[in-house]
Each structure stands twice: as structure tokens, then as C-alpha cells.
Length: 226
Image 1 (cartoon, rainbow, N blue to C red):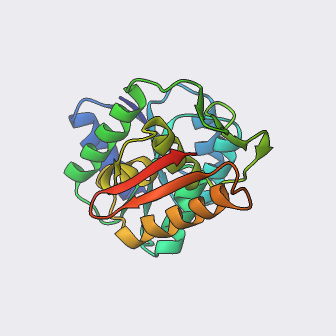
Image 2 (cartoon, rainbow, N blue to C red):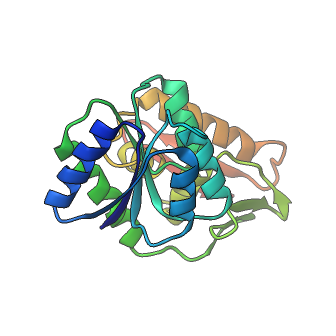
């Protein structure tokens, strides 16, 4: 893969460059937020490793701005901050995965491989339809009987998988991978909080046209349309 490393710590950047290169990857470096954003928007990268604490603008600002520009490059956030709110913020802004420093190179390589495979997997249709619910993947919009439903990025990702598996049980593990990435250390109650919020938005004030997310105890969740 062609990988961009956005990291201001020269020692860490050097270790990443050497480790990734020795494992067959091409590596480019950026040591501040503005330069990293410029390079990632320039295209040509399969993935980017993005530190949060950067000079210029921080990694979360970089992440938000490149996603607003519809940049689809896979982004793995590297952070020394393991606070759950900060990690959830990164995912809501469009991170594909995260890794807390210090980390093992083997784990980093595994996660890069996972987000690469997801990017190469068979694409779902650009528009998904379940009952009165319409999800547009290219515009990242959701309509219910023509009326917009405003979802967070993670809620959108979870709903997309549930709609793709409409009528089938979707495991908790698959939902966590869809929302947070392969091998992400996400607690089950975090998933439950997101599903609860998604369910509330889908089921609000429309008993005549029910869209339900059923809890399948011990297995996962299932999307059903009345």
C-alpha cells in the first residue's frame, strides 16, 4: 500500500517509516496538520496514519476537513489519548480505525490490512431501500417516506449494514467492525448506546409505517420494516 504518515514526532515517524517499508509498503511523511491535509487531499494514498496532537491544526480537524471534501482514503488515527469520548469523536468524524500509543507494529499492520480489505470488498448498491427507508451511500443521507433523518456518522454506518442485511440477524461483532473497525476495542454497551439512539430516530412518531431494530438476545440485531 501507499501510506501517508502524518506525525510530528520524528522518532515515531521514523520508526513507522522503517517498519512499514520493511513490510513492503511505500511511505510518505508529513510533520504538521496543514501539510498532512494538503497531501491526503492530493490523492494517491491507500491509507493514512494520522496523529491527533499535531502542530498547525490537530488531527481531528484534519479528519473533519478531508471527510467534508469527500476524501475516501482510509484513515487510522494514532493517539496517546485513550479517553473514550475522544476516540468516539474520531469515529464520528470519519476515522476508519484507531490505535493507542504505544502500539505493536504487528497490530498496526493487521489493522491496515483490515481497512484495506474493507475498501476492496464488494460495494453495496449506491442506494439501499427497506420499506419507506432510503439510504443514499454516495450522499450519506437517509430519508423516511421522503423526510430526512439526521444521523451521526457511526449511526449511518450501523444502519447501512443493518439495511444490507434486512431481515437477517447482524451480529454484534459485525456491527462493531462496521462502525469502529476490525480489532477495535469497543465495549458492547457502546454499541448498545449507538443502536438505541439510531432506533429512537427511526421509530419516532410514525407508528403507521414501522421501521424497527429488533434486539436478538445473544446474537445481535435485526432490521425489520412493517
